[in-house]
Length: 72
Image (tube, rainbow, N blue to C red; front, side, top):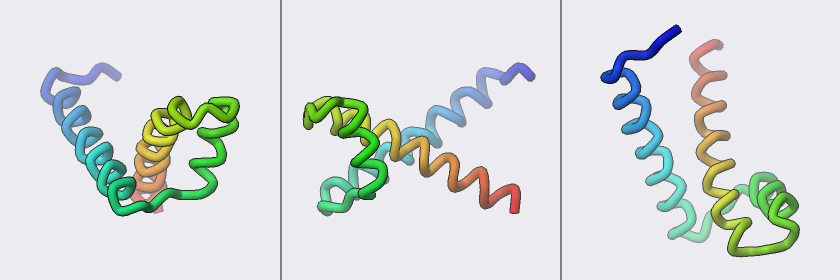
């Protein structure tokens, strides 16, 4: 299925909101342990790289949670 430009823009704006939520979590000192462990393992212990991966993985996890909720 092809997405319209409007649908693509809506998806990007939604994703931006999720990234903002993750940034707020990090600002508050909150991290999901399993997601952090995955990021750190993938980064082979490089904390700087792990931080970026954590954000990416956390956003995907939030998208997955929303998708699962919609299907239930």
